[in-house]
Structures are given as C-alpha cells and as structure tokens.
Image 1 (cartoon, one colour):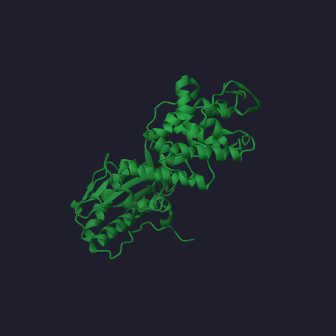
Image 2 (cartoon, helix red, strand yellow):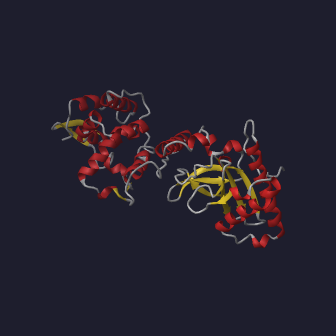
Image 3 (spheres, helix red, strand yellow):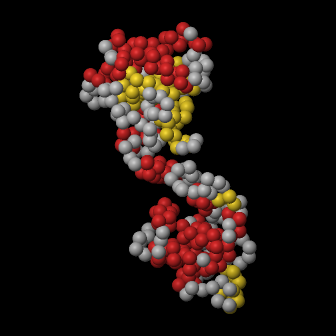
Amino acid sequence: MNKEPRFVAFNLQGMNNTDKLVANLLSESINYMNETAHKHPRSYMNLSGSDVEVLSCKSMKEVAPSLSFPQERIDLISGHVFPDIILHDYNYGVEIKSTQKDSWTSTGSSIVESSRNEEAERIYMLFGKLGGMPEFRCKPYQQCLSNIAVTHAPRYLIDMSLNSSDNIFSKMNTDYDDFRLLPETEKISKVRQYYKEKAKKENKYEMPWWMGETTSVNLSFYNDLTIDDKSEIIARACILFKSLYSKDSKIRYKQISLWLCNNYSLLCPNMRDDFSAGGQCFVINGEQLRRPYPHIVAELLKNHDRIKALLYHPDEDILRSIDEYWDFPYKKDDLYGSWLDMIEDCFNRNPRLSYVPIRELLEENANPF
C-alpha cells in the first residue's frame, strides 16, 4: 500500500523560482519536523494549537538558510488572522492546524475568510497529527478541504488524506480561487445550492439550515403563534409546496417542517393538523356538499385572499422561496396563474382530490362555510 505523501506542492503550470523556493522550504520543514517528532514523540503529544504554530514557524526558519530563503520573511501572525504564517514578498501563506487524535481530520477555518491577509495569494495547510505517532503533513489549502460543517459559523472540514479530486470545490464544480473571491452572500448561496441539489439527488429531505437565512436565535413552537401569524405561514406553505397535494402521505409535510425551522425557527410536531386533520369540508358557500371535500380544500379557500395578495404583490421572501421550491415551469409575470395551473394538476393526479373542482372554486372565491 502506498504511503500518503507528507508534502504535496501546488501543481502550477510554468512553476517559477518563487513557487519552487516556497515548495522546497515547506517540504524541508516537514521533513525536519517529522524527523524531530519521531525522535522525541512524547514531547509532541501534548502540544497545544498555538504550540504547533510556534513550532512550525521555528522549523521553517531553521531550514530556511540552507535554501537561501530569507528568515526575516517568515512571519507568524496567528491570532484571528488567516493564514497563520505569512511569507512576506512571496505571496504565500501557511495555515496551521493540529489535532490531539490519531487522525488526519479536523475542523478548519470559516468559509467566509473575512480575516484573510490579502498578501497571501496562495495558501498551504500544515497539519500536525499529535495522537499515536506524531506526524506532520503539508498540502495546498484547497486540496485538503473535504466538506463544510457548522459550529458558530460555516467552516471547512479538513482531511489531509483526501484525494485532490475529492475536495469540496470539485464537488461544487468550482475552483477555490474563484470561490474565495466571491462576496459572502454569493458564497453562501453557492454552498446552499450545492447541498440542496445533493439532497435532491439522494432523495433526502434536508436543508442547509445554518446559513443564508435571517431568523430568530431561539427555537419556538408553531402552535404558540397567533391565528393571524399561522394563517400567513399556511398561505405561504400552500403556495410553495406541491407535496401538500401529494397522494403520498409520507412526504406531504417533510419539506414544510424543515422550511418552518429554517426560515422561522419554528418547531411543529403535528404539521398535518393544519392541513389535513380535524375533519372534512362539508359546506361550500352555505350549501351542503353531497360528498365532503378533504380538509386541504378548506385551507386553500380560507387562505385564498392571502395567497392571491402574495402572488400578485410578492415580497422578496416569497420570490426567493418560489425560486427555491417551485420545480415546475412557471411565468414570472403571472405567478398566480402558474400557481393555479400547478394546483389543478396536483389535484387531478391525486385520486383523493381529483373529484374536487379546485380551479373553479378558487376562481369563484368560494367560501368553505
């Protein structure tokens, strides 16, 4: 079995003298650090993250003279600046990470990179595995970022054993240097889109709840809302989610439950109660029906005025949500007409609803009482 290389250089077309000099500096530094660590492994096992930063900088300065690399250009910035070490006048930086575990994985830096030092156009990751036999590896930064997770902010996940084609940027079909230059909102949007499409391909009901939405810091219960607030949410749900009209009850409320949590910080353990439970619709415009309609019909009719208002005069939130959730052809200049077409089609496809003249009822502004 091939051993994972301890140092991987940037694959740069026409590598110049600066690129070669930096690559040699880091390669020799890794060799030096590993030789020392293997001679005195116990002294490495309890190093803190800041200790590894100091050790890395010191090692680089130790080997620099043998490569004719100016020691004074190697600067440990650390603190809240990214990356930790700057190679002044060389347009390179080195981010230092470590773990006490016998593992090549860890949580990395924020995807936003708001504290990035602009002097560092290219960045290497120098990683210390302190558990088991201590060892150090170094790779181009983007080649060891496997995924994105959340602590208090979206952060990269590091995997120093990662194949170069398996990094998160290859998965998102983009390049790190293009991605890092995007405005923060565009970064978040691109990542959200990737995870949404990934979930769809895997037939999973998932949402990247931790980014891109402005919502309450506290979770609360949908059932505690006022009647008016509930009606507003129901109207928006009736617009956005075709699954409400699906014959498959297993999927009917999954997207809505995630949407409530993601957009409104609301939990609802009994979402079906507002849409399909609690009895049927027995009366339309004061006349008794010979065959009662399912409860969803009453909800559509009760909230029809709100639905029309939202679609004829859409706010920014409903427009963004329509773009995200409507997976059928629609006319941007006729959202209400497109919604009516979708409702009619969904009812016709569902044996439980196909007998209901839903388009006629909506166009006549029928009342469920």
